[in-house]
Length: 55
Image (cartoon, one colour):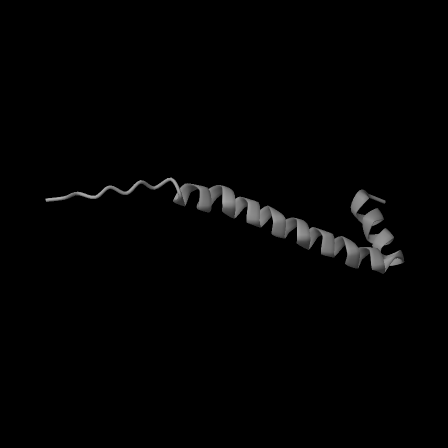
């Protein structure tokens, strides 16, 4: 029995753990997504410098 089969068997025996693990993974993915957005978009967008050209 490989690792994936053992994990599946464990979750089939205890389905409540699957629901909890799924919720934890969703929360973790949400946090990672927010960190990615903040790091790659918000931080870069604030680095723009505007200058006025007067004629």
